[in-house]
Image (cartoon, rainbow, N blue to C red; front, side, top):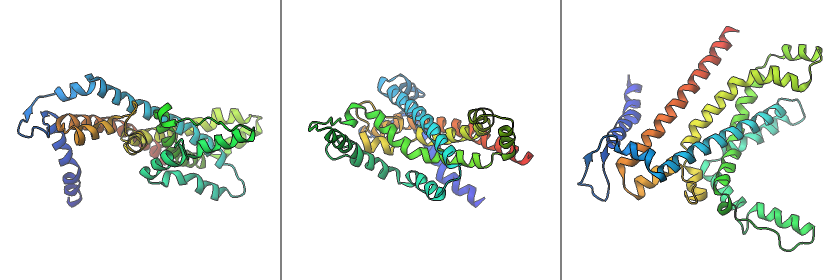
Length: 285
């Protein structure tokens, strides 16, 4: 009961308050002019062109980052599942990007890698062009030319180790006798992966995708740090920040926050079902 009371006060009361505020017209510039407007704020979330763009950016960012991270994580997990000298050290180094503080990772990519004047990427281009005797290498401004891709690359770099950990755990639980029998029957490596490994990893792929989606949907650090929401990169969490703290539209910002929470709950529900199914299958073995 004490734990329940604490959780209710710390999590549910603020959420209930947010829901109540989302049905009001409350602007910080006019604090005395508050009124109940029903679902008007929710209608504006999906009808306003700027807000629709932020919702779309959130969907695109989530799908691309989670999808690419899953593919790269699976490839790396398949490599790290093999036995080779120094495998433990390599696994530790591969996990490192996920352990970096999100705001620090975003600053790293913005200044140390993407910066057109002293960033590593343009530095490599200068060195490569210099090998061929050219003194005018291309120096693209990545954050201007491809702002959304820049954010996606930074998040993929950080979330691929997370996917790799989940899929590597799945590979470690794979029954070895079935693979050995397949090899004795003359199955190729691709056939083993297609008919044995991939079906076994299906639930782990679903779990990694759902957990990754829960966090990427709520991502604020990368968008705020790398582009500050400029050039069409603002996602829903960043738009909530702008609407609440800069525009002072508390009611509209609360409605957007409720939309994000509901989307997160839906994704989390599927994730819990996947985890429950995995536990049931493990218990049945």
